[in-house]
Amino acid sequence: MASERKEIIRMEEISKQFPGVTALDRVDFQIYEGQIHGIVGENGAGKSTLIKILTGALQPNSGNIFVDGKKVIISNPIIAQNLQIGAVYQDLTVAKDLTVAENFFLGQIPKNRFGFIDWKKMVQKTAAVLRELNIEVDPNMILEKLTAAQKEMVLIAKQYFKQYRVVIFDEPTALLTSKDTEELFRIIKKLKKEGVGIIYISHRIEEVFEICDTVTVLRDGKRITCIPISETDIDGLISRMVGRNIDDMYSIIHQHLNKEVLRVENLSKTGVFKNINFTVNHGEIFGLFGLVNSGTTKIARAIYGADRFDQGSIYVDSKNIRITSPSIAVANGIGFLPEDKKTEGLAVKLSVRHNINLSSYSNISRMGFVNGKLENQNARQQIKSLRIRTPSAEQIVINLSGGNQQKVVLAKWLVNQCKIFIFEEPTAGIDVGAKEEIYKILELLIKKGSAIVMISSYLPEIIGIADRITVVYEGTQMGTLSRNEFDEKRLLQLASGII
Image (cartoon, rainbow, N blue to C red; front, side, top):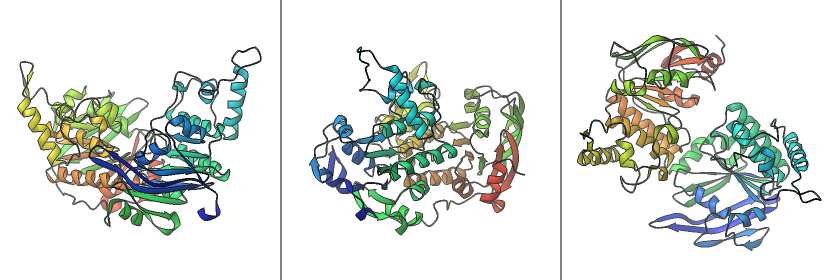
């Protein structure tokens, strides 16, 4: 139990205000040796602000921080590091043009007796740490050439090498496969066994229950509770996070329209997928499910025209359409909401207004001049109807939460009057409250007769939302199940290639 462990850090009545916003309101937080302490809450709950204060990136307006019982002022990240507080962020903070070993020794490059860089020592020490953690990465590799998972493991190994007493993991599994996540948890548990205090932040509630000992819930900048994970369950935790009971997050009203809007016949691409066949009706949510590298994303990109395919046909409203580019797909009413919305779905440095109109400027322009009245009208209507939380239409998109960024991508296609929406991992990286809002938007779309093709690797989500699911394994279509046939075990068998 925490009371039997030695306290490393105590944060007392931490408050932080930004213009017009109270980000934290007298929040208490403790971390002990050998403890994995989860922090959960919706976007805007105050999680990131609390962590930024602990790592010296922000200063509190009031409150105190104690390390080993002594009051400290963490006025910058260097002081945090000197106090042996490290962090592994979702947006990996590495020097990508340097080697693994150079990243390990940044700021403390060893010299030999002649005053030259001791490259041999750097490589040997780095290799020893990687071996101890069973991380199969060459210390001489350039970071940029590693996979996202390998980069993350290297960053974790660096915290281990520096012997930090507290390590913060902020959405660490966002870019990892299931296998990589298992490896991450193995290393976290090793750190715990060695007495390191772990702070674990994740939108994936099931991970919190798998890895954490204790969980703190933040809501609207306040600490709602701090309890042992064994004393709650998923429903109880979600209720505390959102301030209301959620009996069934996936309780949307399904439509039963039989009019076909999209048909895919014998779609094939050599070495990627082959002979893919399915139809989607107006008012239907059609699921594409597969494990990592199954080919579901490639199939969706081919339908949208982002990737070429070798053979097969695509029909929209029974008309054979030769889709060779996204512009042709859009002209035929197909919109694509990619998982990586920041790089593929949005112009993050532009305003909400610009992004909402991004695919529709040809419709609201004449002779090269944009009709500003229509542009503003489009933005206002979508902000209101989708309940996009933004101070104004002029807010830069990168400053919005993940859930609201997803809504802006959707708004872009609604303005363009799409009738077929392809959603790739629609709720990845967004909190539970925002997920519920996205599901209600899907419900509204199908009520209006739109068709949705949804790719999701999260089984509870796709089972809860889809009307039918086609399962893909290594580019091969394994079968299509109707709603009354949905079974988690069966879906996983098909996704693993088991008939």
